[in-house]
Length: 158
Image (cartoon, rainbow, N blue to C red; front, side, top):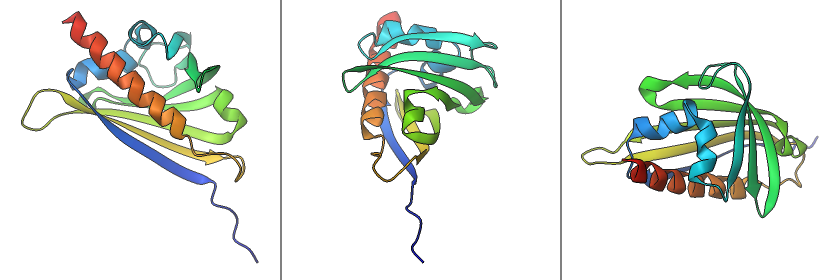
């Protein structure tokens, strides 16, 4: 008997930013439709399809560019914890669902200890449809770029 291929994976990264944890979190939880203003080369738009911005169960639709190609993702907000600056989004439709049976994104921002600025922690939990599908490294790189551009945007707003 052979073992089933391990299709379940996780990827994570951390990005140091200068903006406060609360402001960065609010950009994704409270006003994700402003993300495209901060990083127009990566995120073309974000629309609310159901519910309210930043509320569990709400459905958000993203237009983004990955590896030079236009992509879409529909996500359901699974959890929002403002006191922890945390939001969890489950991809329910779109381009990622062509390669993954499940995809959960957790974004948490924590204040830096003993200094100004914050740490943005991205965590992807996913299951690939088969062994040929690559781990979502390029999506993680996109998250890093988006984080840096949002940071710049938030700093210019101050």
